[in-house]
Length: 280
Picture 1 (cartoon, rainbow, N blue to C red):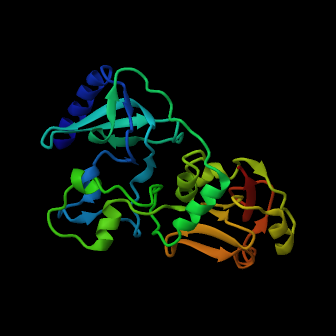
Picture 2 (picture 1 turned 135 degrees about the horizontal axis):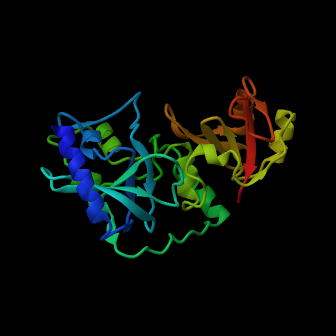
């Protein structure tokens, strides 16, 4: 019975979507791979953030202000008087079903202009990377300070801990989200795309010293499922689940990689390699 009702609501949504087939993010907007946001932010007890292995698996990314969406479907929860949009956006060109809370975007009849993209100055990006050191890891996160309004849209039923509040407000960044934030969303959002982004830095067959000599600030070291950013001549910076955003001495980080991976000029999804990309 519940499933049948949901299906009817979705079909009704198809009829309405033609009226306002577009939406615009005027602020930071979380994009999830489920329309049941209440399951993620509140859970069965109203005070829990749904986690899998310590991460919010439903998180995809956070759309930046100015991101435009095409609305394909409306899902409505009549008992909550809430609607969710299944959307696509050029800012997140990946396969899957992605949803936004209709309250957090502006519905439009006509297609909005594409988000204005401009790459910040190199020194500004490096300064922002340094500022973000110490921030927590957030799967799908690219708004390090979080979205405080999440507590307004999804109110907890009782007091929550500081740690739960950080999760609830999506505070922190993941590895590619760190780069996405400092680049003003001018880089691909997921690591899978960063492996071929920009130009090849020739590191194949080179020693640690030779690789260090070839790298320059903001170069990317990409391995399967992870990206490391060159910060300066001596350090790299990255975000990882255990330690959050942290910097490491470049030589030590490369030597750690070389224990299990080989430097290459072309990324292989099956091979145990890492590549270096220059994009700025």
